[in-house]
Length: 264
Image (cartoon, rainbow, N blue to C red; front, side, top):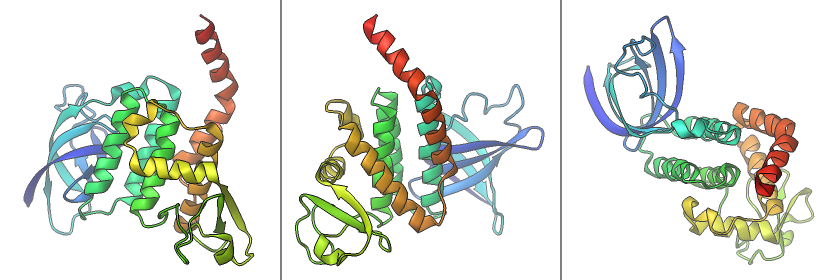
């Protein structure tokens, strides 16, 4: 049995048996890991208060050959994430970020860029940036890191500049120009969204609070990313569906609340 220690971000915590919990976490050096925190559900466990989804922690664990689950020895909280439960949007977006990471990050493979993306996006949400803007930023970058959404300023086939719009063909995963689309049916993406992709590509998420992007471009980017992701995975993320349905149901109430707070 080998012992490891690393900085990590917790992705998912679920119950196991009467006193234990299963914890999925992301490390820079070894990617996604999944292990058992024994006794974590007990009142006086050393894990009490430490297993917060999207918290940055220092974790040590033990691995045994041919075992799917590692054994978690200790968890030290470095950046709490309890504030993500302060409002509904944060809760929904937090679950969405965690599920995407758990799905796209590879097990036992270095994940430095994915780690930095998740860490920076979580920091931005905790720092007050709109969670839904952060969700769009994160989903775009997740696809880019997976090689599914490249540079939106030029056509990858002919290298023509994409200015007024681009096309996502029904059978493709890349934005191309009209000429390369060759009249094929597909989703047209407007210039504001192409510019937004460029802004996201060169802007850290914490800076997004300074100049929030237009809602229409955000929505079109969301639809584009969801389309590419579904084509690649063959299904949609459960957390995405929950987020969309819940926000659609409570949207008017949230808008009324925001208006009342603004008037006050």
